Image 1 (cartoon, each protein chain N blue to C red):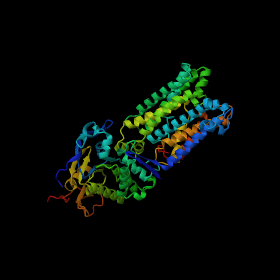
Image 2: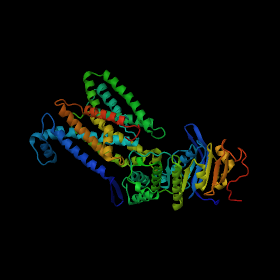
Image 3: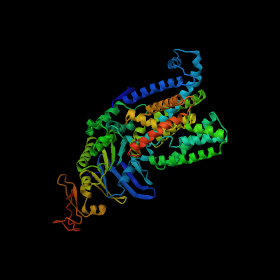
Image 4: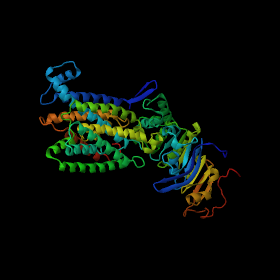
Length: 286
Length: 344
């Protein structure tokens, strides 16, 4: 698990800002190819900003993002779109649009004005619908769908784009727990089946620990720790990143770290605040 | 919705069946409207004679002159102007995802008006030169608004608000010019401002048709990113829509409205209403540029004919009729829409 995986997507000394407000000052990260990477951190830590920069939606004030060793700004945006897909946090579905129509729009980077609907496009859209189990919804209007179905449809659009690298900004935020698991399982399928590189911004640290091969923990615009969740997620890290006292125990289902917050109330029988004791996290190197 | 996929070698496209049907019906309506428009007037010509003349099947010496020299160019101007407004409006409404984003509001009309009125009032200009000055005025205004709105990508609200602001400013200039004008000039300027296809001859149709022959294909070819832009600016960028592609589209769509305005004045509400009608007929998916253009053409042709028929022998400017029908429609749209900024 620790052997280095060559990275196709690299951020090199990024400084990211909106107007005059620096969000990220100096950040470097290499996204391991073919892995499921999750970026976590408290609100306003710059995780979505970093994702936007990786997807060339935000131009860095300083530093570069490299895609396949080339500066992403210098690659034609259409060529980038054939290798890297991005699903923003709140994409807009035009009123009344059908599922099939929406998913077919993912084919944009593969089309030209004279080639607007090739057999490849048709196959890719059918495959994307099948992969997300939305084939039956194809003729439905996106407005009518539940939140979970709608997120599957947006992911189907990203799949139809046919990229090896897929970036998603908080794809589970507005979903109930069942659909959060559903979406993350789907993304894991995508990662496993074609070795796609998946990068996700997530809020839920426990789900991040369970699903990520590679966890990037951020606080105030810099990376506090990154690596295999089983090694990086400790009680100290949770305190440092989120300012939260918590126990870290093995997840009974996956064996990955499970963060149990302590808080000020309802601590009956548990350890008093601050007495973390020895690390009970899952350390694979005994 | 059934979709027809067409593939010949490397060329492929798909046409939603409903958009195709709507386009065919609208095209027939436009053709019938043109023939009807020609038959109506102080000297009525039977509809069958008009059709016979236009198709070359049956000619009568009496009406050939009236049909070919007087009424056909007027009807064609109406159709071309309406088509240009309709297509232009559709592009803007789709591009900024806002049903209010018509060229009326985005400064095309106001810019043209300042140019034309200034020329009429200050320089006593007339005829084709007014057309060119109006064209220059609208293109300059659109560029100014676009540049002002372009800070960090184009936001729909920003564009609409800046457009409204600039339009208000230019309208003040027009009002000022009119107060300074001689009575006769003021009357001519007012008629121009209302939008009219009265007395339009082949000298109007030819440059207009030539401009449309270039602008319509350019718009259609560059309209492809609309499908991505509708999903939001970030998603569009992620799908590989480069920043400059909407610029070409915006310029060609603005130019469509500009040449139409130059030829007939700012015919109100056509650019606003045609896309909405087309969208309701075609359904939400397709960009429906061609249907919107054909609907626009039908609206102006029929409005012009009706205004002559109802108010005969007075020739009411067509802009009066389109505004009288368009304004209530706009109100209905606003009352019905619970979400400003939705695609309608």
